[in-house]
Image (cartoon, rainbow, N blue to C red; front, side, top):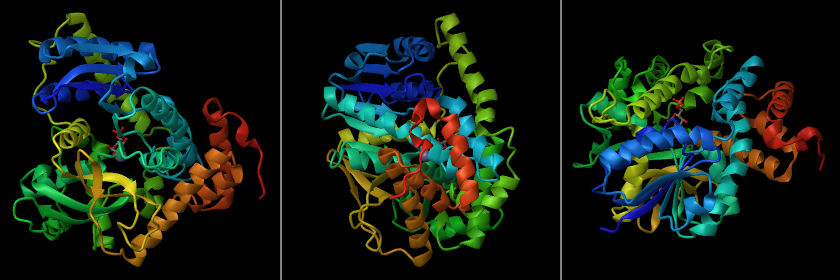
Length: 453
Ligand code: G6P
Ligand code: MN
């Protein structure tokens, strides 16, 4: 099989060690010739890059080239796959995205509500510039994009790169949820074929088919969830932390109130905002948890490995741990290059997939993915509750992008007032002003005036 050229964008991300390990473990199915890490910050990337050199030397000797760079010409020339996971503003801005809304009594979350809104206004310009640069050097590259807030990013990439079917915006949340279903059913997520609809971080599973028999296991999964099953700590990243466990356990509560479909965990923020705010600590959010936990752990591992100059024979030896974030993007690349047409949940333009929903809406639905890209499976019309939820949320997403592109503060205010986690205009105005101040290095000072047209 042809060996491919791959670039990981956001090379300095603490998620990269796992992604690189995953690529090394999948070398038979996804052979790589040249692997490049690209980041705009050399210092931040260097430590991950040095670790990567050791990892590749020991676990991927077949790789012809491994390097890390901040030079787009080096990174993007002749690329087959760009795996993108950037965080504009890094974790320090995530902390602000979470804390500013909470200060005003609203949900503080990195991708949902006012926090996701602020992140979107930073992320979109960065992604657009990045995609333009990648396209300049590699017009045909597959761009598999995890960057958040994916719903807003997808709305923007649809507008700026219409018809570019090699940009796939993806999310691992539904997949991580399917891992939990596997736990309930005594199998793995790879035994399931999901049917799902919604917007990103805002959707529902309608069916969870058994891949072999075609039987819909959703009723059995619901029954297990409702029977009081509580998820315990597993050995995967997504179930090692208390806050994630609570998130998964909350699925049962949502299902009791809304029994029709299995909910995405993120619906918690939109359907139970009061509960979320009451149980949040405005002085210690998820960003703090990550800075004190995973970030420290990963950096100390990287430093230790670099000091030792090896991984094999050390406590950091790569094992068989499965990381959902890393495995999903690699599975997707494999389905594309082998034209496997496996089912993935991708954020695509609706275009009639859901007949009673705006054709322009960027929906997250089940798609077959092969060498011609993502082909969505048609759905039945959705019920009034879901339609109403999605239309409201999509209007918020559109206005966020409109406000950004048109530099229109009134549209940004409208966006926040539409968001279910904000709603009140006076609150929206206060949050918006605080966010504008906190994001001045990213947004500039263009949002200080209000247009009235
Ligand atoms: C899930 C979501 C991602 C999100 C991540 C946050 O994987 O799909 O979009 O970025 O959770 O996880 P963290 O551990 O950083 O809070
Ligand atoms: Mn996601």
